[in-house]
Amino acid sequence: VAPQTSLREAFAVLEENHGGALVCHEGMLIGIFTERDALRALAEEAPLDTPVGRLMTVSPVTARTSTSIAAAVRKMAVGGYRRMPILDNQNHPVG
Image (tube, rainbow, N blue to C red; front, side, top):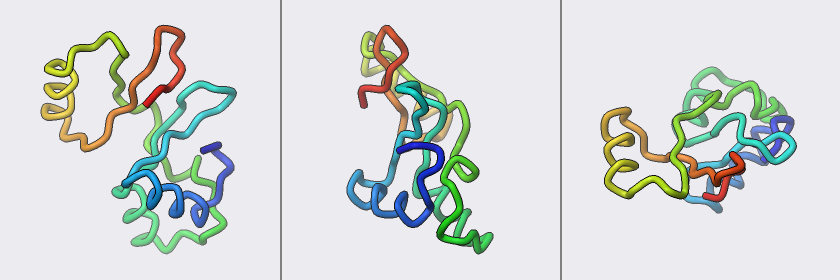
C-alpha cells in the first residue's frame, strides 16, 4: 500500500494478506502495517481516514531473497516478529 492509504483501506488489505501490508513509496519499502499496528490504532481511536503512513512501523527488519530460511527464522525469533518483508537485490519488496 502507499503511505497515504487510509486506515480503512489498510484494514481490508490486512484481511486479504493475512495480517500484514507492506508500505511502499516509488517501489521502495518504507514500512509495514501489521495487526499489531492496527490494534494500536484502534486503541488510540485513530480516525479511519488516517493515512497508514502515520501508523506503520517504519524501516522494518527485512531479509533478502538470498537469506537462508534458518537465518530469516532466527531474525524473526530474536526480534519477536511475526512478519518480515523480503527484498530483492535492488531493495524492492517481493514478499
